[in-house]
Image 1 (cartoon, rainbow, N blue to C red):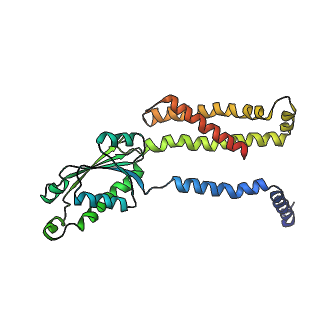
Image 2: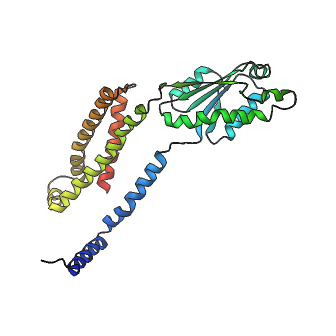
Image 3: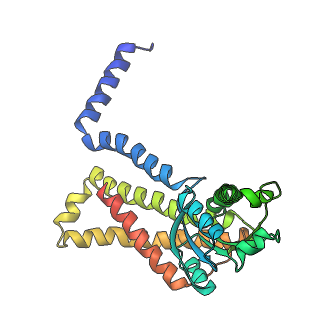
Length: 282
């Protein structure tokens, strides 16, 4: 039998009519790319800006004020607050409330004028090395541009290179800067989101295609009981997937597992249920 373009056209017309009569499929064709673009467009950013920063300034000199003002005006740093102790700064880093703690030492201006190259301490949350790399790379330029306007007259000798200060960076929680520490655990969320939404959506669709959904709803069970019965097995599957990823992360990539295991299990439960509920809604 020869190839017939008229028959192909008839099948094409039938498919487009089916799409026209199925607005849910047409909506998914439009909405899924938009959702993925928004999710990955905002989540995957190799040059993030406005990172929360706390400042511990142990003096209130002109140079210190110029430096703090330059950080506030920089697109990389968002000044959250000025702190009064090293312990407060470390606590903010541990809580994840700031990404950087900048410490200006005592006698900063005096040592700067005397040419003793005072050290500026930068404590960075390096759990995501990509996030902090851009800001740390721009820090020297921010500091230099802030102080150049003050290096005038008798202080003009401070302008030439090398810079009259040193920047000491402490990368906390991931000093080696391993990207696996950030990427591999993040795959738990990505895989659970993809598989959780897909399997529940397909499970409910399969019931409707086979005509068994009406039989199930006609049984002496409430709709909420049907939904719970459909979700609970996939919660267990989600935990199995998470356990596999965590096991491989520890023994293949040598990623340390820190913190509360119970809190991790609770967070996974909430995340899995939300993804399954989203799949049921679709």
